[in-house]
Length: 218
Image (cartoon, rainbow, N blue to C red; front, side, top):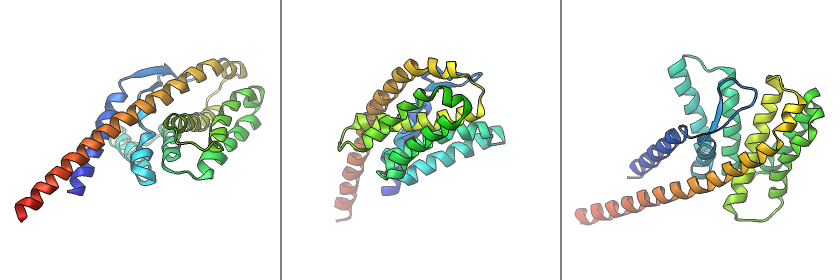
């Protein structure tokens, strides 16, 4: 029964994940055809509901599916998946390495880059998860905010070292990032509540079915 219940939960999450990809939110500056989408709100929640193992499984499954359809796992696709994986791990653990050291490390890597050094104020956004780490809270929104800015930090550093962009382009993104990441955090909170509701219904139905089976055996 537990295996069946978990299977229904996994199928529900997969369905929401697939549908979220249809919602395009913003264009990724410096790319040719990459968009931020609803996936950025759903992907991190694999860690919230599946823990470290769930986060890892979703990351591996994305690579396997990409390999199945495109016959290769490109470095660019891997780089696109890593920020979401880190955001997912943020939800799955309270460890300081993920919630404190990672954003600080990203700031350092960004600032030592020749272009990043000219746009160093851009990296100040990654102080947000650092501040959140030191605030005792049970806020779903703050967790979502920390998660999305960790993803942003990791993704920005990867982008800085792999995609040619000027300091002016990075600085021009500062107001866009604020709106974009706030939207992602709010989206995560809403999707979290939806998944929580669906999983609750699945658990309730499973409990009813289990009781019916017990009664039938007696």
